[in-house]
View 1 (cartoon, rainbow, N blue to C red):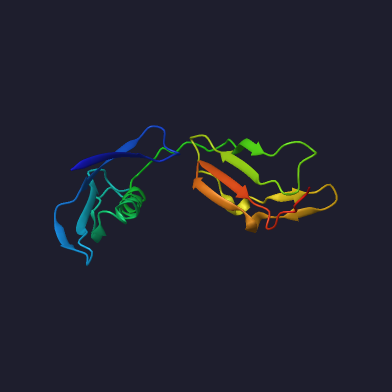
View 2 (view 1 turned 45 degrees about the vertical axis):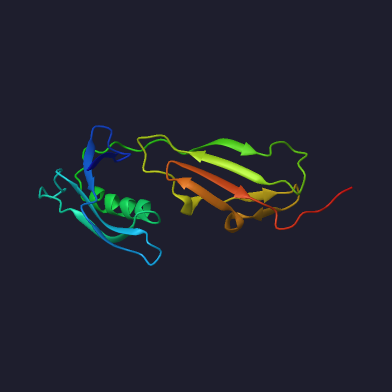
Length: 168
């Protein structure tokens, strides 16, 4: 059995211990990979003061989807925990890196932006983020063309021009 400590990013005073167990191997896939039952539980009480029931995930392929199954079961349990008192999120996310910079940038340059939000925080709400490319004459909304990766507390945003202009 493994133990994992989880925190709510808006609750500085509390961490909850989760127990993770793989009690049995159910079977194997056609390729011979083992399939497990994943059990995740905690002794913390729910927000209504009752015991939180363990989460069971069957058919977890130990080599392919255990991370996703574990993250989902932890999320289900964490959403039931009483995290009060919560801390007010009164700081805005900020840009920690951006490339390229300056006024004489090639039109074929990739764009990279890294956003960060410090705890205590509810995280960055990407639904409000818009990315505009300004060529000095017109602003282009490239939000839907950007690749986004990361976590709610730290996102990286990449944009690659759809085509490159070759210069000699």
